Image 1 (cartoon, rainbow, N blue to C red):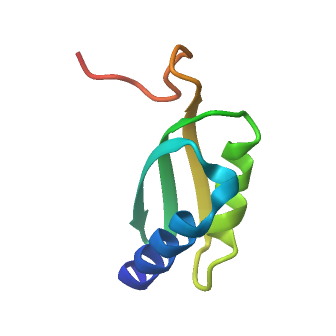
Image 2: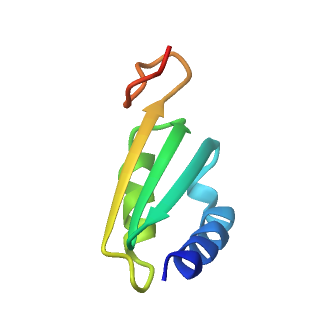
Length: 79
């Protein structure tokens, strides 16, 4: 399932004009989608999760995104 979810998500993200500008990457593991990166506006995080959850076979979607370039990272950074 994961490869099919990843392919479908990639196409949906490319077509989602409302999510631009953003710099994102994602991981699909066990039907769970993890979206990470930077977005321009706070409402884009929930929109990403909704977009991913709308795909067949996705059980959960989690957006770990930073709003803007100067905000605190939403995940631990290795030093």
